[in-house]
Length: 434
Ligand code: NDP
Image (tube, rainbow, N blue to C red):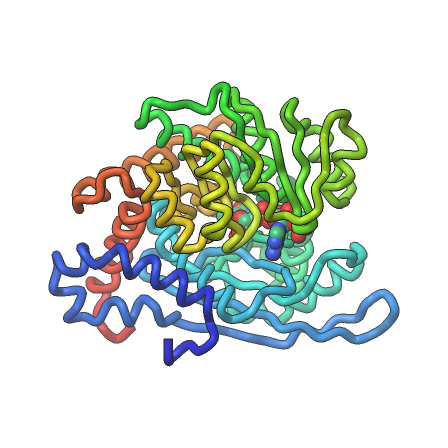
């Protein structure tokens, strides 16, 4: 805490992990001898830089760019870029730290990194987005590469932004490599990458439900957010026979007891880039409510938080449990506060933690890297099948590890320990001077 003052999100992410990996540290004295914890919470490298761009009124704007290269013990740094006004060192470091363990759980050879900027894409024109991305990449290009560090999307960074970033990298380097994932399909992107985090979340949750004699079919589901993760989580949950009855954005939420019409939602959010309020204006029977937090007061069986960090606090967790919610699957990164997680676990809610449950996005990014290296493209079915088996394996690994350490059913402990062990052992094997 003294070394990283004011970094509340980073402290929270580290605290949650350290609290649960103690049994693994105690089991192997080599970790303590090698000071593995202190090494793991210190990023290998943190880059901050100025991003200057010109808006449509010819004003010069200045933002701050970040890239944390957190840990490369098991592969090149890998993790998304976030464009949101709340981005700061603490947010980037919490995301980077989580990413290290998440990538380890995927079983693919990827280290952990994360980046972004406090640039707010809301209300910006397409040309402004392009000029920002080009300026951002002009600096970032010095630090990344297909075998060094491979960024992807996150909040505010989708296919459009990845395209602009990739174009600028190629222009600067004069090389066509898989330096970013989440690319368009015509220039090296992978099928299923768009759907991967949301689909993967549902594959994971389905496995957790199955293990507890439950299923998605016939259940009422809340999905917060209406971005990339939320839309495809809602799509897969619906395909699994559930009814998604509410979704949100940062202004408010819509309730549609008939089940969210995803064609309308995609049109509003992906094509027109409008607010979720528009949904209620277009779909009969749907209601709009101001304020995004209220979504957790809607009665449901299963909650899938897919918007942002700390969106479920203790009060929201209590409201969910009081209304009969029996399972929570985290699509966003760290969407539940520590108090909320403990409340879920104390009340026997089936809880799928983010770093395991939302690993499908980065796993499919890993598959995109493999396809780029081979200069081949796999079919939708091939990638989806691989994603599915990766998510089932992550679930099994977390569940078995939890049991092995005496925390049967606690996937938070299971995922943290399983993710930690692989990275820690690789670091030990590679010596101290790093
Ligand atoms: P998008 O930008 O596509 O969507 C984000 C959604 O969350 C939007 O509906 C947005 O609403 C809402 N949101 C963002 N910030 C806030 C906030 N402060 N309060 C309330 N709502 C907010 O992002 P993604 O769907 O890609 O990411 C969502 C979450 O999933 C993030 O936590 C991300 O780190 C995580 N994640 C994403 C992966 C991916 O593959 N994309 C992979 C793994 C995790 P509005 O439009 O009003 O801002």
